Image 1: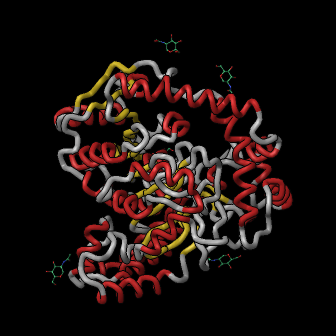
Image 2: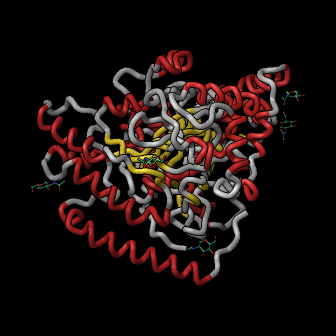
Length: 515
Ligand SMILES: *[C@@H]1O[C@H](CO)[C@@H](O)[C@H](O)[C@H]1NC(C)=O
Ligand SMILES: *[C@@H]1O[C@H](CO)[C@@H](O)[C@H](O)[C@H]1NC(C)=O
Ligand SMILES: *[C@@H]1O[C@H](CO)[C@@H](O)[C@H](O)[C@H]1NC(C)=O
Ligand SMILES: *[C@@H]1O[C@H](CO)[C@@H](O)[C@H](O)[C@H]1NC(C)=O
Ligand SMILES: *[C@@H]1O[C@H](CO)[C@@H](O)[C@H](O)[C@H]1NC(C)=O
């Protein structure tokens, strides 16, 4: 695992950061004086566009400069889009030509995409691995097609834990061969969490306005928690997985990672919906999409009357840590805002997954990845076996000796959907039905509240949604979030709760890049 860098190296990195920040300040001071772009929300930005105080080109340049200055240190971005500025120009022209109110909330807004989300343009889609460099995707991912139609500026590809952290159990969070180790901007020596590490790091550090991540189990919720951003892991199928480098279609989801709940909702509104390339799941989940979209659920009094379940074992109130203190005060705020806290939920084993998730995933990954690779227009690798062989030929750059590829090897050794996998599926259906679903219904809960991302396996195996909202900073300055999880299709309720909590607490602050 990671070794301590020598002191001289550390000091030179500190100097580098200071220089980077100083020059960044100089470069952006003119723009910042006119309008504070740091921490600007999509709502602020649209207002500035409309008042002719800002163009999408200026905004895109602001983020490109931030990436140039900060990314050598943070490594949250793998590639920037050579067409970003021309897309911004087009948005600026369209805004002049079209009537006010006819444009989407993301029109002209620069977005970063996790590098496992396909774009059919000059950018590569590689899940962070050299094995996919030079591959050509057949088409944009379903969510990307929607972003383009909405007029968003595709700013670049965000880094990730390579292969969405499904190559090996031993790999570091936030590491991929193509861009190296992503850093937590709040404490550069701490874990950014993954696998959507770059998406979280980048929006936290204002290297993009908004971003997309993906989650199979924890990959949106955990990095959101660790980088003080809001992450929405939607109900399975609410957002298309078409054109996303898969782990398993049984659990994979695409969701927004942004600085505020309102920004995340603006992104969600654009990306949800049917996609012929993920037809079954997106058709089934489209019944959950509310008429008029999700924005209507951004209510300041969203917590009023909500029943929130608290899992005692997840909250350590005996401790005097800043985390325990913050959570205790948040509980009081939740009550003050009119929520009812149901505290008696003590037994986690009843709603927790067993080994079934891992067993099923291992078999499903090989099938799903092989199908993705076969569908590519051009690719140096066409199967999981090819990727494993590639890694063995490029041991050094892919850090095979250090991090291994045990998940890949185990998956390669599986034989399709056999009896064991079917038994695992049955177990997970039973665990969800007798566990989380029963718990929610019996206690008439609107959401289950957990710190950080501890609840993710429960949400993962049932295709349930969750939202992580910034909740504080620990003794090392590392952020932590609070997660609201609910039944399938409960995004409207979760958004009311998350927005109510965010507005009552306002915990997020921009990072200061300390070691
Ligand atoms: C936009 O410009 C106008 C006029 O210069 C100014 O009054 C207003 O405050 C500006 N708005 C923003 C968001 O900067
Ligand atoms: C995509 O990868 C190729 C190397 O194969 C590189 O030349 C190109 O610059 C990459 N695209 C972007 C947008 O960085
Ligand atoms: C928790 O649930 C497990 C599994 O259902 C059960 O065996 C155990 O007795 C329960 N523990 C408590 C404290 O209720
Ligand atoms: C499914 O559950 C049964 C009974 O609890 C257990 O024996 C079996 O090992 C589980 N299957 C898997 C794949 O975990
Ligand atoms: C960052 O974390 C390290 C431990 O990983 C700790 O020693 C250090 O004090 C932290 N820095 C800050 C600024 O809190």
